[in-house]
Amino acid sequence: MTASAHPPHTLSVAPMMDWTDRHCRAFHRTLTRRTLLYTEMVTTGAILHGDRERHLGFGTAEHPVALQLGGSDPVALAECARIAQDWGYDEVNLNCGCPSDRVQSGSFGACLMGTPDVVARAVEAMRGATSLPITVKHRIGIDDLDSYEHLTRFVGIVAGAGCETFIVHARKAWLSGLSPKENREIPPLRYEVVRQLGADFPHLTIVLNGGVLTPEAAREHLAWADGVMIGRAAYQDPYILATADRDVFGEDVTPPTRREAIEAFLPYVAEQLEQGQPLNRLMKHTLGLFAGQPGARHWKRTLSEQGHRSGAGLEVVRGALAGVPESVLDARPRIGEAQPA
Image 1 (tube, rainbow, N blue to C red):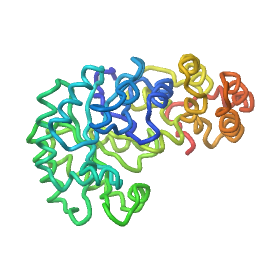
Image 2: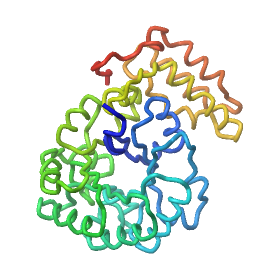
Image 3: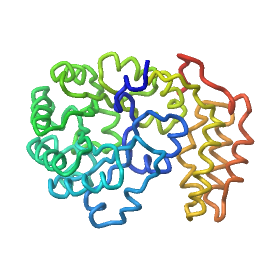
Image 4: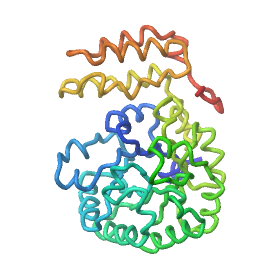
């Protein structure tokens, strides 16, 4: 199977606040070259009035990488989409799925599912400002607007504005009464709704999000979905991404060992340390690398206890590695072998 047989959304890692920053994405790239990566959600105000290098900066090794925007004003979103193209992003995604109080007070995120015309105007404006793909990430419903009829109306109106890719979290969101964490866990997963959406909109790209824990599970969903997005599992146990290029994208590649992934990450870490980044901020995204493996506790404890100290450098990482058995460091997943959760 050739690489070109798989479009970018075949497998992706979800945008996650406080998690999928540029350091996280640089680390994930040591495990998978093909998986589409997303930024954290960045508000239009932060881009238009804030430190753009801090909010938008990324390394060329992170491609393919998409910028997720939070906002609802078409003019501001269009300007941010234009800026995203100038900065070299591969896609711009509009957040219509986050249920936090912060985004509700700004009238964006999941509450936008109640105003599909607003989303359509935003998509149309963004498409007019950039040649990048404009995609939308949303829930299957919010509050009492949770009928399949409402969902298809939302998708139909937004698609009419030119959006061709919809990333669908297969849970509804309660905008009051549940915290963002509870909204990721309490509303039941309804994959059948997303599957029906794909059947009813065959000309669109429908990407499944929610509760997918491994590339093996992703492959099962890809029997009917156009793409699969993995969220927290890819952060808490990042080594599940090591088999993605081979087992999901069908490339003739050998998955890296955990040791190889860390060694590939260290030049980036050294560069960032020289620029003043603290070690703990860089390495926090690797804490789950040995999840379920002997030595995992030593790895996490060493990095957590020593990584925050002033002047902490690569010697801390070497010390953390030294406490992990070589059999774990150098183990390579076999074809079809599921990684422990």
